[in-house]
Image 1 (cartoon, protein in one colour):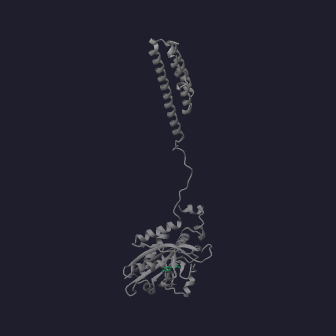
Image 2: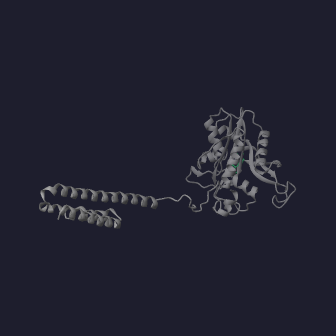
Image 3: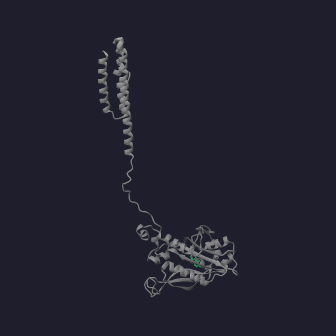
Length: 347
Ligand code: DAH
């Protein structure tokens, strides 16, 4: 073999290598091609063995040709390696691409429950009149829920509110009125009080269209040195109009609550017939919406306020009742079964 044959042979090998590289698809394939064309047993590596048969003058050219061949082979293989690497990155990127134009699966945004909407509405109304929102615990003591509200043990008024007792002293509050007591005690008998107290209350009732063992109330309490019954009436008129429309009127009927004296029940003119009388208001022209009164001196005293200096008014209303009247809902259980067909009407 002379240098010319050698060059021819290397050229042939190079063409074969190029062809082999065309088939290569992975780094693994490439490694095999590399060892076939550049490894110890590869033909180009073996060619050096012919050196001894080459005339001395040609030896440098022979060696150079082999080395340059190896160099080109290496370059071809490395170029292929880079090509495969890039293709792999490309493939990965394509596989992991997120199509932002694809439609998202349908999901329905939630909305505020109608009871909470009404609570928020009433809160806004009172905050606008300078009231603070106060909350109290749902597990109450007999003392705050009853005793300090002028309902001693064995008092017949306890029968007005069937109670879920936890033990002799603890119960699930039957109304939001204990927050009155808690707040007055917190204020220490000196500062004026102007609060509303929204929250859940509980009664030992069998659920039916008009009873629920758990429902929502909002309590209102104002205690100051000049608070009068006409302040109460003006405030309740505002509530009635905010809830049922600006044309509404109210009337106060004498009633009885142990924690107020005098006590009243408040009726609003029927929004359905404008007071003329219809089936909604049972032909009376009025609908009862809440209980209220002037804070009983006994309650002021038990909560640390001096009745000689302070008077107060209080009221309590049921949120479900307001919602039922406002939207003509006939069954209180609708509020609690989470039927979306019901809930979505108030979005
Ligand atoms: N606590 C009463 C109830 O749940 C409602 C009530 C009536 C609250 C008159 C008051 C009030 O503050 O003055 O039946």
